[in-house]
Length: 122
Image (tube, rainbow, N blue to C red; front, side, top):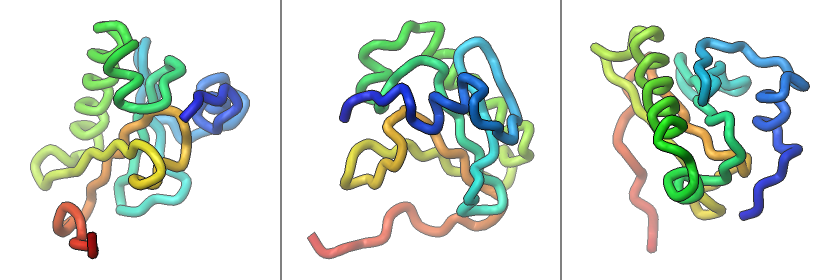
C-alpha cells in the first residue's frame, strides 16, 4: 500500500476538509467518525504520512509514537469510556478492510461491543 497525500485524513490534517475535532497534540489529531459504528466512535490519526501500523512502528519517532498513544488514552478518558470499557482498532490492508491508506486508530465505546471477531470459515 502506497501513501497517497490526497487521502481524506491527509486533507483533514491540512485543514482542507472540516472535522469534529475532539483532541489534538503535536503528533496526533482526534475527531468523531462521520459514520459512527458505535455511540462513541473517534478516530485518532498521526500527523505524519504513515500508511499502517507496520509503517508507523518502523518509521515514526519515539515522540510521534508516544504522542499517538497518549492521544488515544486522552480521548478514551475524556469520552468517559475508561470505566465501562472501550475498544481500539487499527486495520491494515485489504483483508482487514482498511479504507484509508493513512494509519489511524478507531476508539469505539458507549455500548456493549460484543465479542472480538466473528468466526468465519477459513
